[in-house]
Image (cartoon, rainbow, N blue to C red; front, side, top):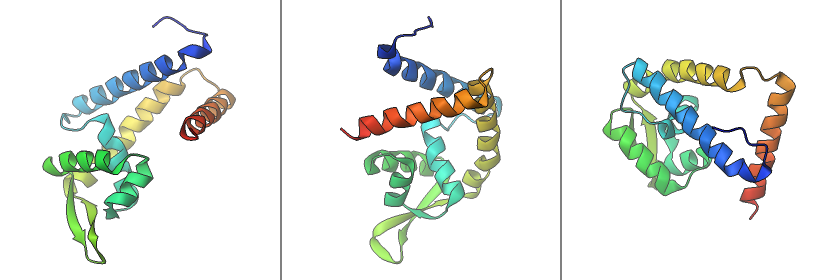
Amino acid sequence: MKRQNNPGAIIAMVAAIREQANTLILSSLSERSITDILPAHGAVLNALFKQSPMQMNELAEHIGRKKNTVTGLITTLEDRGYCRREPDPQDARAQLVFLTEKGEAMRQVQDEVSVELLRKIWMGIDTQKQIECIECLETILQNLKDN
């Protein structure tokens, strides 16, 4: 990709970064013979690593996605054996999502892939510039959410 110092190219740049990150994640998973997980599943698994079980609506809020999007991700993960759903005994309208043994086994894999990805992302960028980059991206995200 051609270097762009044009502030108007921010969306194209973010999209290109996401595409490259997803490519690296898929490659790292494939090297570990894991071919049934997509990068989008990572946020769900990561949330469940921190708290399992979790209600579907809490999970959606935690990862910043719409409930119907999370439902699709959970359905796929459930079909592939990484999690399971059960009715919430304290709220008949809600479902709880639990990691399965197969899902729990992804914890170390996700840690390893994340370390590899972050190392590659920040290679050659000093800590102060990393902090400034994150702060700038957080502001951009908040600006977009405010509309």
